[in-house]
Amino acid sequence: MSDESVREQLSSLMDGELAPDSARFLSKRLGNDPELAATWERWHGLRDSLRQQGTLAPVDFCARVREVIDAEDGMAERQTHGSSRIWRGVAGSAIAASVAVFALMLGSPATVPELALPVEATLASVAPVTTSDLTPNWRLSPVSDRQSFVLAQPQLNDEFDNYFVEHGLANGSAGALGIVSYVPVVAAPATRADVAQPQNAGTAAR
Amino acid sequence: MSRNRRMPVLLLADMKSLLRRCLLLLGIVGSLSTSAGDAIGLLTAAQQAQSQQSFEGVVVFMHDGRFDAVRVVQRPGDGGYQQIASLSGMPRALFRDVRETRIEAPGRAQRLPSLVFAAHAFDARRVGDSYRINDAAEERIAGFNARVVDAVARDDVRHSQRLWINPENGLLLGVALIGPHRETLQQVMFTSLVVDARNAGNSDAPAAEVLPPVDPAPVALPAGFQLIAKRVEGARRSLILSDGLAMITLYLEPRSDVLDRLTTLRRGATQLASRQIGHQRAVVVGEVPLTTAVDLANRAAQVLND
Image 1: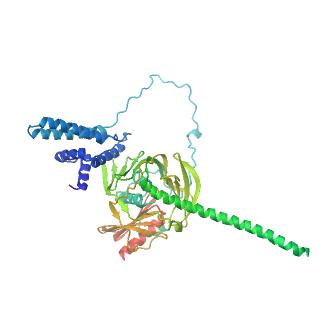
Image 2: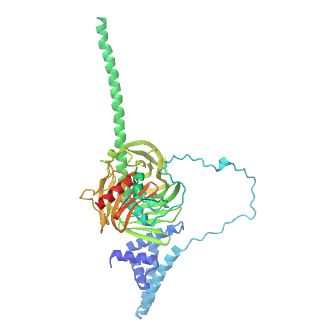
Image 3: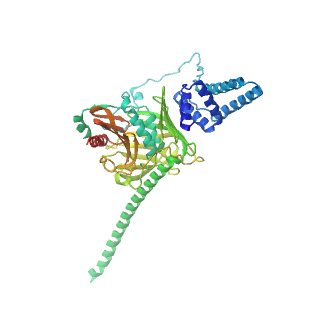
């Protein structure tokens, strides 16, 4: 099986779209292939960062998975010593389940402890709020009309979204700025679409 | 007689004064060239450090009248990777290793091959043709010393840039794109940064290598820009253009629909101009002024139809 197809399967496993049999074999491989396990760990870290859990997978996550699998293997070895192949299947399922439990433990949303608020909170004094308090003391640079675009709702355009992504990736790979060039790819898009007729093209170009 | 004796004294004084002025002028010119030389050296160091330094931190991205916080992690070397995740606004994250780039958003994952370019956009030999490079000042960014390098555009085809570079390790701590009226169009700046000096390496092992083009660009390029790489996927061509610092991607592709349309979009300082004529479409994306993008898209679409 090629590396690419393994990664494809890994991606499907993350999305919960892999057939149970394939998932079991892949789980087994995860326990024996440190590089694949590291990829699994990083992809989970990436997904966790989307869920705002605030923490990434523990650094020894893969080692812990391997320990569980080794323990399960040892247990299965003892139990299946001289017994039927049925037990091997059960042990395989247990391995897959163990990995899945680990994944679920990492994927479950973090619980927020209840805030210990005082029963009776009192304020000694509250200063009146003035208009100047609400005015940000910022000094922003002037923005030209052409580039002016302030606090408008993000306007997405599916047809062209990928061009921005592809350019951002190319810029990150070949550009002078390295990883910083990827930042616009993940930041919230805010776009302005002007669909102009050809006669307006000259105006836009001037 | 006395006048004749005074003449050489006056001449000597004039010559001394002239010599002092010449030395002063030479000193100024020398310091300016040294400043430009130092700045080019810093830019070169920054280009190299981007793929060799191991670090993680949080950057603030100022664009479109808003701020976004983004967490970045870079681990170079064997098994190296880059991870970028938005901490504000819409959740989105990017993971890149030598094989592929994975972009995650809620309910959507996108996998793309990781591109590795044989040539890079930054070219120390050419950057001076399009920009005046100055090592302007020293500031402190995210707790690190930073030299401020100004790349001032020599024409209105491109934007000016201000870069903050750590002189010790070459890390780029911030970059701002500056418009024609000295306004900030877009800015990325580290607010926290942890550099791991132990884990330095080179993560540029080839995955989907993009080779430098052997043929010239099929369309007249904006002044100062050169074709540095080309990628062909079926009938679709992606041309990577650079002026030594800024980058433009030009996509040339046939379309099944027939249109006569110009579309422009913008994200931060990144402009997109798409021009379709008949079955052919040219899309220009780059951190350049709108006019540069539209002019190139128009020319390219015209050439595709000729």
